[in-house]
Amino acid sequence: MRTPSWLVCILLLAACADGAPSLPTTGQALAELDLAALRLLPAASVEAPPSAGPVPAFDRPYLDLAPGASASIGTTRDGYLVGGVPLPTSGPLASRPVSVRRDAVYATPALIRALSRAAERVARRWPGSVLWAGDASARHGGDLPKHASHNSGRDVDLAFYRRAASGALGDIPTMTVVGEDLRAAGGQTFDQARNWELVAALLEDPEVEVQWIFVASHLRQALLAHAREAGARPDLVARAEAVLAQPSDSSPHAEHFHVRVYCGPEERLAGCLDAAPFHAWVHRRDAELTRFVDGLLPFLDRGWSDELQWAVTRLVRMNATIALDRLRRLERDPDPRVAALAKDAADFLSGRRTPEAWARWRAPDGVLED
Image (tube, rainbow, N blue to C red):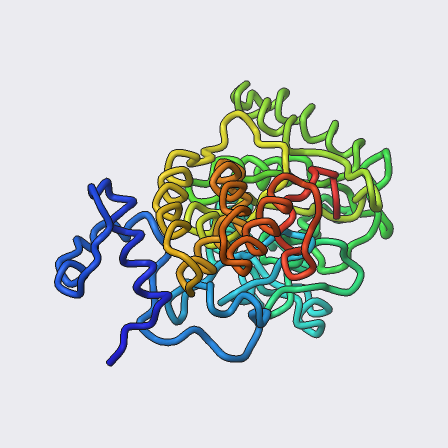
C-alpha cells in the first residue's frame, strides 16, 4: 500500500526537526526513522484526511491531525474549530440554555478544562456557585451570529457571579448590565470576591494562557481594587491589569466577561494564529516553531510536488516570515508553478497582498475585538 504523501512529509520532517544530518531518500531509511521526534508535532493520522466536513476544502490535504484530535485553526475572527467539545450543561460550570439552543457551546478541550477548574475552585470556596457560560463557538467554528470573533474555539462569554438583594448567591443565566454602582436589574450586585477568584483561577491555570478578559472599565477597576484589598500577589494583580480590558470595537461588556486564550503549542504548528500583544509571561515556544520551519525548508528544493505545496502551505499558515528569503529565491524557479506559488506565499508573508485562498491566515492586528 502506498504511504500517503502528506504522511511521508510528516515523517521526513520529524527526522529533520530532531537534528538528523540529512533527509532519508529510500524506503529503508524511512522505515528506520526515529519517530520520537514527532513529540514536537501534532499527531499524524495514518488515514487520508477528511474529504468532507468542517475543514475548508483548500485545507483538507494539509490538516495533519489524528482522528479525534482537536485544534483551533486560524484566527479568532476568521478561523474554524476541529474536534471541539461542548461545555457542560450542569454543575459549577453550566451552559446558558440560550447558547445551547444556538449550538454555540463548543471550544477546545483545553479551554473547557480550564473553565471547569476555575468554576470548581470558586464553588469550593462558595458552595452552590454556578458559572454560567454563554456563547463559545459553533460546533465546527466559523462565523457566529452576533459576534465578530468566537470563530475558532478560543473565546467564551461568561456571566458574572452575582449576589441577590438579600446577600445570598444569585447566579443566573441571564446577562444584564451592571452599572457604575455595581448593581444590576432586580437588585442584584456584582460579586467582586467571586469574580476576582474566577479571574485569578484562569490566570493561574497550568494549561491555558489567557490573552484577554474583556470587561467594562468600571468593573475592571472594581476587580483590581478588590484584589489589592484582599492581598493578592502583586504579580497576579499585574497580570490581571494586562488582560482585563474594555474592547475598542464592541459593547463595553458591562453584562459579561469575554475570555480569550492563546493558541496551544501544537495548535501553533497546525496553523493557529494569535494576535498581538503577547504578554511578557506567555510562552511563545518560538524555538520549537523555528525548528519546525527549519524542517520544512528542504522540501522547497525538490521541485513541484505535493510535498512542496504542503510545505509552502504550512509556512503560510504559521506566518513563518523567517522563510521569506527562501521563498523569494524560488520566485525565479524555471517551473512556473513553483515560481507562482512562491510569489503568492512571499507576497502574503511580506504583507504585499493576500491571495483569496489564504485570507484566513492573515495574522490579526491586535485590535481589541469581541
